[in-house]
Length: 424
Image 1 (cartoon, rainbow, N blue to C red):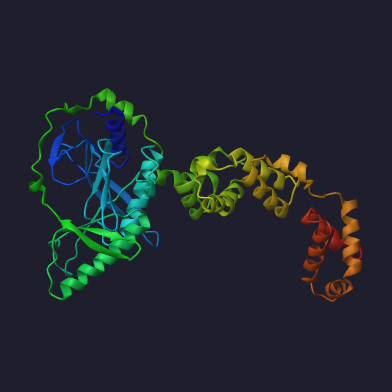
Image 2: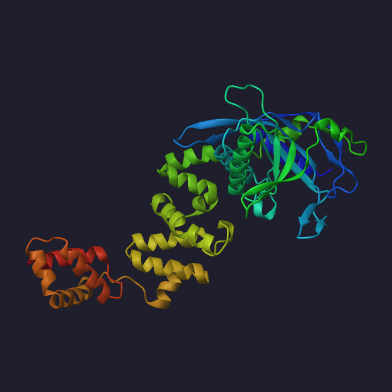
């Protein structure tokens, strides 16, 4: 038995409001598939570690909905099947390792509900350091049961299980197809069979894998080689101390503490919460650091297929860049150039500025030379401004920036230009 897996399952239960079973046991689930050659899987049947619970999801329009959780239990993982054109293979490397299974209630009515549920659940699991939950790496997997029924019918229709979905968006696509397939079949008077189907993301279709067994077909019986789990008061208190700040609470705190818009808080909590909070000086301009993370850093990380944990720019270095902008050392245009070099080389912003001679020109005497040259070379724009076309000054500002190779302080350029054009 893996003690850490037990503790992480209990922590998951606490995060989603489950009842933690003080006594749970292990069972053998018997079945005959090539991914489990001993023909049974160690699992939990009638006494799982965690029972009940809820995951709150956000719907379009800002509404919320609670999705019930039936149980969270531990079982042993099985092997992975690979299917090729004319052969199949089985990879046993992960077989026998602990796997936590979370079973939801049938509270989802649309593919978008399922997408929101998986997204919210993933955020909770990542926040508790349960897993990185990268579906493409197999760290989080999802099997979906789908059934349709005529409007007004109380009983659920026959359910179909879908497997082989490697992304959360893939789950949404698979569900949309399967709902449409089952609906069309029922409208033609066809019968839906309880079965397991495979999702092919390339073709956008599901296909039959096997006829699904019912629970009694698994012939569960108690696992004789593993002791039951008794959760003591001390153990539960120890795990409860590990409870993190949950994503929704963190979103609300980011909005109130840092004055961020709801969208910024959503993105940061989902993708870069710790990075954001470790950045300085947050108290000076928390919105500026949020903008750079969301609009610049996350985009570059996505392009290079890296996570925020793999960022070549430490949070403190990004904060230093923002400080250099706000203190007038560099302007926004130079900052973009420095940021690109920081991402490519990992160097600190002040080192890059020194090496490339990118310090912003804020000396009025030096700027006046560029401004005089711009005025002399562009008499038409000067005349347009004096004739009442205030927008003409923007062209002149651009010429000054060009002459200074982007190093001029834009605000100071505007002030001196305005004074000179008005005869001051």
